[in-house]
Image (tube, rainbow, N blue to C red; front, top):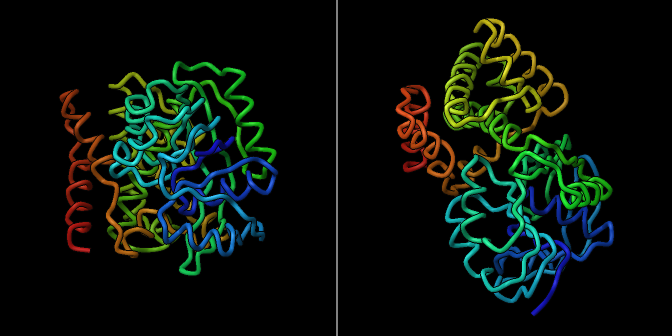
Length: 321
C-alpha cells in the first residue's frame, strides 16, 4: 500500500511527460501502468527527448488497488473504458482528480467514479509521441489549463497549476475551464477526422484547402452543439474556434492553412494522437469523443450531418484498421 503526491493513470506520451517532469522536480509520483510499461520504466526510468532531454526514475504500480492514497490523481489513458480503469481506485483516498483525456465526456465519468474527490476540469495543450524504444518525444509545450467546473478558480487549483508549471510543463489555472475544454474539443474533432481519413502529418492536411474546409465546417457544427449545451467557445485553443464560427468560411480556411504553415515550420513531425493509435493498431476512442457529441446532438434535436458522417466514417476505418 502506498501514497503519492501525484498518481498518474497511464504512461503514454502525455502521462510520461507530466510524470517525468514532476518526478524530476522532486515530487512523489506513482505511475499506474500495465506490467510491460512498468518493466520499461523500472529498468530505464521515464525518458524524455525533443524539447528537453532527460531521464528520471519513477515509481510504478501495476495493481491500482495498491495505491492507498494520492493528493492528486491525473487520468491520461485513452477514454475507452475509463470507468473500468478507475474502478480499482474506488477504495483509495484521492484528494483531487482531473483528466487530460480527449473530449468533454471525461468529467462526467470522473465525477461518477471518484465521487468523494474534488474534480477539476482540465485542458492539455501539450503533446508528444511514444516511441518504440519506450522514450517519449516531447513536441509541444503550450499550456495545461486547470479550473473548477463551476467556473471559479480555487486556491487548490492554483497550487496544482503552479506546481506543474514549476516542474517544466506550462500550466495555469483559469476560470472558464468548460469553455476551454469545449473549445479544444471543437478543434480536436476536426483534426481527428482529417488525421484518420488522410493519415498525414498534421501540417499537411492543415495546409490542404479541401481538408481545411472540412475542418472549419466541423468546428462550426461542434460550436452549434456547445451553444445548445450552454457553453460559449473561445479563441484560446489551438484554433480561434469562436471567431471561426462567425467569420466567412474562406477567411476561416485561410486561418487554418496559416496554422498549418506554423506546424510545418515549428512541429513538422507532429501527428495527432488519434493517428498514432490508428497506425499502431490500437482501438480509437471514438464513442467517447465524436460519438458522445453525436448523442448529445440527438438529445438536443440538432442536425449536424458532417459530424455524424465523420464519426461513422472514422468508426468504419477503426473497425478495419
